[in-house]
Image (tube, rainbow, N blue to C red; front, top):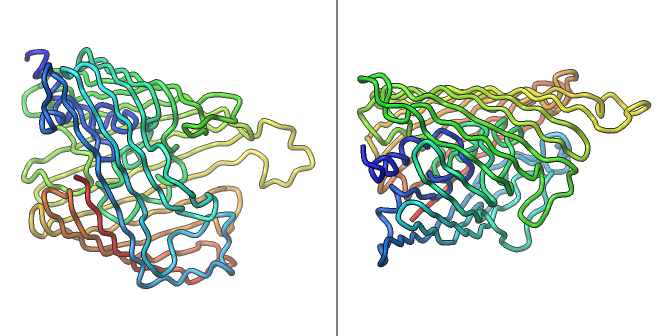
Length: 390
């Protein structure tokens, strides 16, 4: 395989390596040297691709009681009845001869829960430079995704349901400034291992700060590895690539030396696709150890272990056009106590797609269960999502 062909294979080869912002792969509408081939061609090997994305939420029904529910433990899990711009992206990505890349994308992310302040103005969604000398070694520096988790490193515009599972939202880190090295290794072996089946990514990040800075005293170190079987894994949760079967197995770890605690989080995941079915699941475990003297402080603020998981199933009724999807996910913010942080969500919905998911409508019903009897409260929702990624 030529050097150029090897670079072009990266779109498939890195989709589950977990490189931040789909480093050299698809993030929120990301691009690679391969994907860049579809962009605007300029002289002397320069390729540009605009990023234009929007995700609109309409909530016609919501039981959540902001006055009665506990925002400190799990936050308001959705928006009130009405319409909001949940996400928006606008920017540009450029590649020079598939070797050097740069991306600058501005973004708006509406507040998802009561633990985060609602933004007043758009910010930087990603800003990185990349160097891709070979399929096996890719380097990226800037504001980008942390390589941790399967769902957390996939584009929010490529989800099969309205939002990521609780564990992916609460236990996987967001974009951070950092340096990442990753790649895809391995030659094709018959029909079992595709080209570049083993993918890896390791990086060092700010550890809690956004692009404007970091108040934490220490960094975050994170890494992810995955192996694809039968066919390269497509990070989009809906099974557009019929009828190929594919299996992907992955795992990751990240350690953050934060201001309040040292937190170690590990994760494992499995993805399976066959015929019109797509199945995906993950499990997360973390331990946070306070970095200050906890003598005399309530047990809630001492060493804490958290656990989360989800299982998700999708079925294409009409290939590439109409899909039904369902998910069950659980989250326990402190396994030592029973409180409102012990949650179980059951969700299902229907998706209508155009242009291989670049434009779509999703209608979901979400049933939320507080596992501690003292914390039970009605807070189900119906959410309609309109999304476009052009």
